[in-house]
Structures are given as structure tokens and as C-alpha cells.
Amino acid sequence: MTTPELGCLLLHGYAGRPFEMSFLADHLRACGYPVLVPTLAGHEGDAENFARSRFDDWLGSAEHALRSMQKQCERVMVVGFSLGGTLALALAEKHALAGVATIAAPVFLCRLFPYFSPDPMLFLSGMIRHVRSSVPSAKPNPESRRIAPWQGYEGAHYVELLHSFKCGAIQTRRGLHRITAPVMVLQSLRDRVVHPDNAWEILSKVRSARREMHLLSICEQITSGHLLVTHEETRASVSTLVHEFARSLV
Image (cartoon, rainbow, N blue to C red; front, top):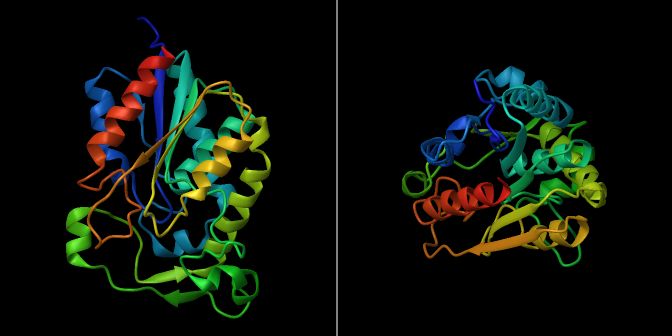
């Protein structure tokens, strides 16, 4: 049996499920690529396990999946959404990859100058985690879910997990100079969860000879503009762009 030249490892986002990557996974499989979409540690469905998981656990899941994919394919492209994109960059800092594609991926979650934070709690997460384990989150908007379907943990924000994510993103940003694989960054200009400047931060710091960015537009004003992989206005574009990137790596 011939070993496939390129395999695609897809990583879902924080508190989410592999479902987030299903539109993209189906598209890549239909184009003939082997695809693996692992469930990150703590994201299997048990809220207590989720609350105990940390960035290193999530990265460990991604590395385990990468080793599995490397046994099946000559080369591996890693594609990550949100947290999955941060993990994809972290993998590229340590492993030789065929390419990396990030979708709304953060290397910072909040900043003071110029100010940005989807939740002011993020600035004090290191202190709050010693006082409160979780804080309530807003109830989902049914119309928002129709426009951008999502599955995962909701009802509360686990402070220790958010702090771990924040620190993991900072650690990944500091290591971006070690990345030399081809990089493609997809970002929405009206993302209210991951600031668009993250895209510039990534591309300005990696040492890849090939770097490209695609800014996707979203017209509706109901959602956060973050869920590019399932959003009805962007999921087809995301699938097409990632496929073209994969095809260029073969």
C-alpha cells in the first residue's frame, strides 16, 4: 500500500468539540486527504475532567495525534481553530511539519496597549483563580448558534483553564521565531474573541519563507465573528483556502 504524501491534522478550539472542524474535515476527505480530528484532553464530555485539564494536556493530545498521523503519512499539515491554532503553532515550534494553517488563533488573549480583552477577568485570572474556580457565562443566543453552529462546554468559565490558556498563548508567541514551515493565517476582522492583531503578530514573528494571510469578512452583527470554521458566511471559504494551501504543499 502506498503511503499518502500529505495528511491533515485538524485541532478544534477551547471548550469545543471535533464538530467544529467537521465542515473542513469533510471537504479535505472528499479531496482525497487522510484527515485526523482528535478530541483534546478534557474535552471528551465530562465537565470535571475539563475543569482539571490544562494547556500542557491539550498540547499533549495534539502531539499524540501528530505522532499517529506521522505513522500514516509522509508529511503532515496541521490546521487549528482558535486554541487549536495556538497548539498548531506550538507543534510547529518543536516538529518538522509540511505546513501550518491557523484559523482565528490567539497568541495573546488580552492586552493593555492598545486595550483589548473579550472579558476583563482575563487580566486578573492569575489572582482570581485562587478565589473562584468558575464564573457564570452568558446564555447562548439561538440565532447565533444557527448562524455559527457550536458544541461544547458552556454555562461557566473555568478561571484556572482560561489562565492556563492565556499563559500557553504567551509561551507560544515567544517561540514563534522557531517556526520555518509554510504558514497560512485566516482571520476575521470583526472577531470579538481573538483580536485580529494576532494574525499580524504570528506572521511578523515566524521565520517561514512562505507566509500568507487571508482576512475574511462577516456581514451579520449577531455572532462574535469568531467561529469561522462553522459560520454560514465563511465555512466554505475556509475549506477552499485550506484545501488550496494543502494542495500547494504536495
